[in-house]
Figure 1 (cartoon, one colour):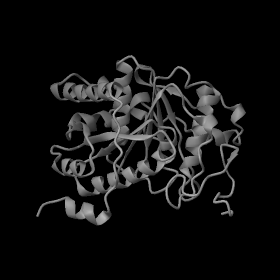
Figure 2 (cartoon, one colour; figure 1 turned 45 degrees about the vertical axis):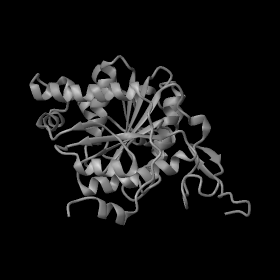
Figure 3 (tube, one colour; figure 1 turned 90 degrees about the horizontal axis):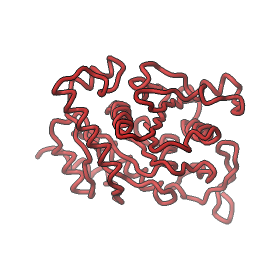
Amino acid sequence: MSANGILPTRRQGGTATKVPTGADGEGSVQVHLDESQNIEGAMVLAIYGKGGIGKSTTSSNLSAAFSRLGKRVLQVGCDPKHDSTFTLTRRMVPTVIDTLAEVDFHTEEIRPEDFVYEGYNGVMCVETGGPPAGTGCGGYVVGQTVKLLKQHHLLDDTDVVVFDVLGDVVCGGFAAPLQHADRAFIVTANDFDSIFAMNRIIAAIKAKSANYKVRLGGVIANRSEETDQIDKFNERVGLETMAVFPLLDCIRRSRLMKRTLFEMDDSPEVRDAQQRYMGLAERILGSHASYDVDPLPDNEIFNLLGFD
């Protein structure tokens, strides 16, 4: 660090930037977003939550619901597993990182059809992929993906962008979509581990909100018949649950059938799930409410949740 409190120059997407110390949280070494990579015009959402909690299911059905409301939607899966959009496209589409590798990372050689795939009801689907395990940072891939989308003007006619982000966010790379998002939503179940992860995500969103437009949009309860523990946490920190999805077998089956809930056979359970997602989409579009809340100390969560 130099005497003027500026970190050494770093690069993102080929553009050098300088970052004030602690700009993205105390001790952060994140590269500040190049302003030329801002996403303008579209509503940008980031979906976070504990690994395996159902973020991709939530994101895909939410994207489908937005499309049924007449919105032009782009979903960006930010996971090396690249399975965010397969219920929309019914296949595992090639990733941005693999496509870049094929042309030796010469972005000028990539066309939109090389990395953007049309899914259910016109939803545009992109899978960033990621570096091999232990070899790089997912934040770089997110930055390159946004750069390609802007380069090919694929965001010009988009109403809603949904970033589906893997797992917890202790790594700055996982938090990279927060530099682009307007609002972040946290998917959680009614259990200690999911709520503990949610608390970490709240900390990441609060750190990013100091320098970016992102704000916390609320909580989505998933696989939860009851919400007493989520309610207890929300009341303590000042959050709100936007929608509740119980443990529905049709949601499990939709993943196995590689399709969204809106393509499932008609049944009372399927209709109920569809209505819940449509209601969530309408609520997100109709409200710009945001929450500026502080995460709890770890010991406080431990003492808050559970039963005496």
